[in-house]
Image (tube, rainbow, N blue to C red):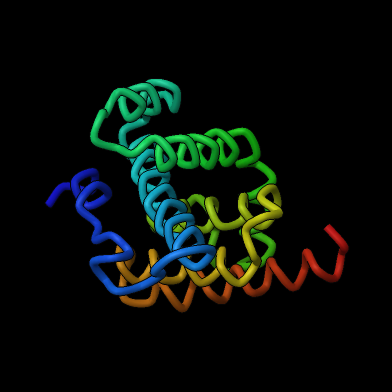
Length: 168
C-alpha cells in the first residue's frame, strides 16, 4: 500500500470501536488527523532531503493529491513549512541533545521525525508535550530503524527537559 493510500484507508473511530460520540470522538479524530499529517510531513521532508527537490514543489504536488483529506493536508503543510523555516534552530537543538550524532549524519527518517516533533514542541502549544513525543516515537518505530524509537525518545526527552528548564 502506498503511504498516501494508508492515509485514506485508515479505519474510522467507529470501525475500531473507539471514540463513540462527543468530545472523545473529536479527540480521536484530531489525534488521527495529526498522526496522518505527521506521516505525510515526514514523507515530504524525506523527499526534500533525499532528492533535493524544492520544498514548495513537493508541497504543491501533495496539495493536488485529491485523496488526502483536507485537515491532514493543512496540518502537514503547516508542519513542513514550519520545520523548513525553523530548521536551523531545530537542527541546533538536535545537535545539542545528541552531540555524539552529527545532525547531517543522522538517518533521514530519524532526523525528520525529530524535526517535526521539535517544531511541535516549540510552535504548537495545543499539542501536548507527551503527545508530540509519543507520536514521534511511534512513527520512528514504524518507519525508522531498529533503534530509532529509543533514539528519538531520548533526544526529545532531553530537548523537552532543556526547554522546560529554560522556560522556552
